Image (cartoon, rainbow, N blue to C red; front, side, top):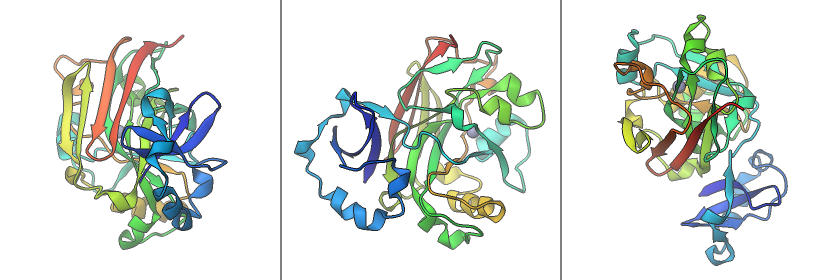
Length: 277
Ligand code: ZN
């Protein structure tokens, strides 16, 4: 099932995406509020009538989780990206955080910051946690995942590499767009999906999630050794090769550029870059 948070002018609502239409789920509160009772809710939502919906094109799609409790992102997690970064394959998973305030809608503008303009894209599959857990075994990880989204781990490269810790360069406002909806975990094999990024229609990244160094279940297991994962926590699972910083000469995003990230079975997000006001 594809669950979206959308706004048709009266504030955010939860909806089910059926083809090119969205049907209101009739639920109050946030998507995260409903994850605990999802097993009983899912059959009700699966029975919604497509004809009662409205065209997707008439609504604004929002980030499915507007304020995740945590946003963690893994670095150096596709072999071709590790190679272009000039680094070795890490023995341990490399993690950084993105600020809650970096969350952005799947079709909303992304800022080129005032302070620095080395802005780059990173196409990534995004995991949304659905069930609380600590010390989650790898074989149990799937049961803790609510679903998957398409994301762009937008990065300001100068701030990323100005210090050993990357989080500031990863946390600028608007730099974590994801969506366009959550595809529930029962619908996809997360390790067999084509992933692609284009800038103004030109292909920059093209890979498949089977090439993840640490797969999503490894990631959930590892993170949960340190911290309790909770419903609505969000994980950016790594980007394949092809980033602008690795091009020769380096090519960063500028105001007016349109970046599209698409993942097989999960949909696409598309963000226009604009100068910070
Ligand atoms: Zn990334």
